[in-house]
Image (cartoon, rainbow, N blue to C red; front, top):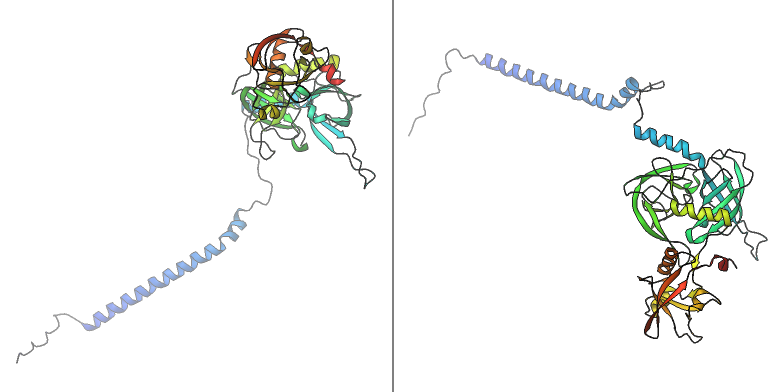
Length: 395
């Protein structure tokens, strides 16, 4: 049997009481550290809960804040502010009340009121706006930038250009005609400014650039305005008839349309170029009408022509004593047989009435246009005099 070694004696100088006291001191120290940690946690929790109240107590401003000095406006801001001050008195709000509707159930229904914008053209009180703003109106009114409301009457309208001229009746506010610019030398990227009354919000300024030039914009039936300006300046319903300006505050176009799926501005707006506006407005003020070049034909609608598989302008009939009739052009027969189809004008393809109208406008009233005409599979060329058909349209 193996014997266990005897229990080793404690090392010299070892005192069990000292060891116990050391352990006790360590326990007290750990307890103190724990209490300190708990106290700090309580302090932090208290501060976290009280922080919003302390912030409100210590940092709340009980009086008006001191205004911080701004410094000078940027040069671009100064220029825009000055532009608005100079041009806004020339922009008006146009109201058009249409014919009152009669109902078999009610004695009278309230006539709807449509509104848009306009520009003061001259010191005589002529105002330019879009034709679609005042179309079918029985009463017209204009609110000036000063707030004065003035009745107005139509001097003349040009549906082909979606333009109309109104005459203010005895305004008391001094008139400030808008400055006229040019649309011929515009460049893509040039700054643009629009002032109008979108959604009835008067004297609204928006800014942008010339996004594109030489667009074609359909207006009246079978007519397009050429050279139209595209801009991304915000244009909304109510801006129609208002000015599109360059950075000098000059009129470069009349805002007339937008492309938008929702009806609100999508950054694609169109303005009739001021060079066309200048020419059309002058004719309206002088004669009440704008000469419309034509040759005296009634054409088939383009959807009907497309269904027949014909590329060109199908003549349904020619007006008596018209240039077309004198040149030997013939309309369709009573049983619907197509006789003459115009396929070219002065050597340019004609796919529809908009192409023919553009060619006649380029030729000019009083001159001959060379038309390529197909009949029974044969092609011939005829010279037809371009005439003013505006009087025929009025009658």
